[in-house]
Length: 116
Length: 111
Image (tube, rainbow over all chains, first blue to last red; front, side, top):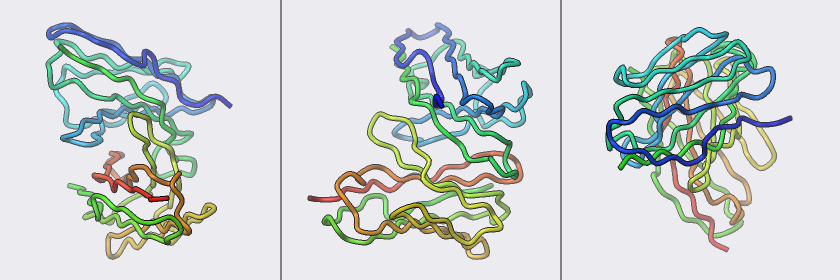
């Protein structure tokens, strides 16, 4: 069974540009979560989707947005990039939402975004 | 607001030692707690998930316990090996559906 895949793996952008990252969950998983990981802040929760609905959002500015498609694939978009957005962006999928059996999260390899 | 703390931040042990990693959380109203390992520059690998109704979970040389009343979880690694060297992270899932991660423990097992 294929794991969580993320594309692209590496990305270099300049300030002011926008970027779209993609995540394909494990087959059958309907919950997808996104995280930002930086050396200074650690792993921070961005948002979670389940069945195409955003169920929760972390404390990030509106420049960070996402969506989930009917096949459970998810995309994350960051507009007007800032230097501080340079990070490893991780996606995780689970069979069920939190609180239910099957909520174990499985992570993809991440997308390394560098903003110059 | 949930805060998750991991102590120690870094640990270096000789091969073969048994060791314990600690995870503390401030809000006991959690759905579950999950332990991960992360190798440098890589994604996270799930190790164990403990539901709020469970006290412990075991997988091979790993054993994780959960004490919600005291806001603590421990990850026990038996007979450590150099391949266990990585950063270990714990994360809680709470009623707000948010996933809160600890700061991690960087483990180095010396051959």
